[in-house]
Length: 163
Image (cartoon, rainbow, N blue to C red):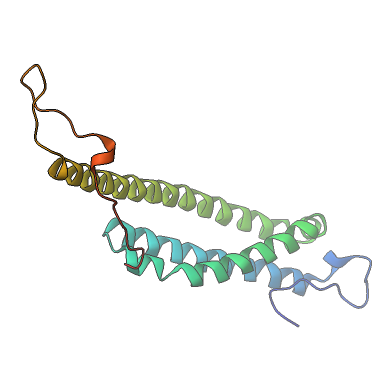
């Protein structure tokens, strides 16, 4: 038996929540999965804050696999929630609190990712503007002020996604 999967006991196939050991195993596995995923998210946040985008991207595969386990356990818990809440309400309350803490961490992570996105977009726009300014002809308008470069003056800007 896979310890992360809730399987009804053979004695009562109509009541999947009756198998306390399997229910505890599912809840324990889900908490471990949350802890692992939270650790990966924290590590990614630290790397992004330090500007180490390449290292943060390397966590993607591990995060995806752990997120897959998270979703599978969440579906199992949702399916058997009524039975589990009847058998072990204190365990589910502990799980709920841990899940709330995880959700808070995800909100912080979204803020970190949005900030990193805004900073990198600002850098790219700045580079593009500077390239356009340097390649545009330096002419003066009728008022005696320099003309601003047009959008079509800038050469194409190519980005490498391999960091």
